[in-house]
Amino acid sequence: MKTVFRFISFLFLAAAVGVGVLDSIRSVSTSSVDLMSTQDAWVKFFPASVTMVEGGVAHYIHPEAWRWVENGLSMVPAFAVLLTLSLLFWMAGYKKQRAIGRFAA
Image 1 (cartoon, rainbow, N blue to C red):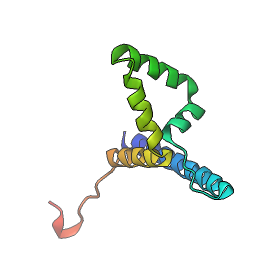
Image 2 (image 1 turned 180 degrees about the vertical axis):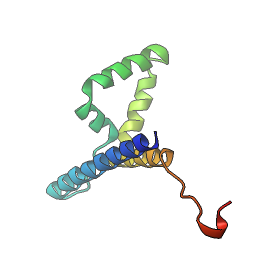
Image 3 (image 1 turned 60 degrees about the vertical axis):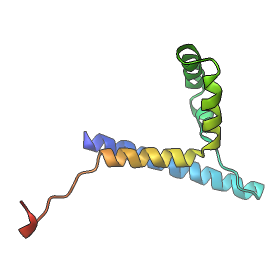
Image 4 (image 1 turned 90 degrees about the vertical axis):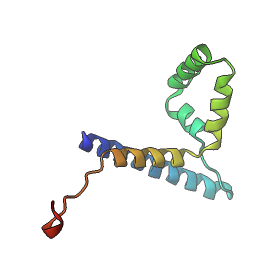
C-alpha cells in the first residue's frame, strides 16, 4: 500500500511541476504574474465533475454554500494544492528506515 501512496505522490508532484511550467510560460508571455487557480484547473480538466459536486453541495448542504467553495478555490493556486496533495500522499507512504548497529532495539 505504501508503494501506491508513493506513486500517487509522484503523479501529484509531476502534475504540480506541469502546472508550474504552464504558469511560468503564461507569466512570461503576459509580462505579469499569472497563476492558474484551482477552480480554473478543475474546470479545464474535469468539467463534468464540477457540475456534479456543485449539485451535491447545493442539495446536501445549502444552495449558497457552493459560492463559498468557489471563492476559496479561486483564491488558491493549483500548483500549491497539487504540492500539498503530493506531500500528504508521500507522508502516508513514508517508510521509516530501520536503525542499524548499536541503536537497533
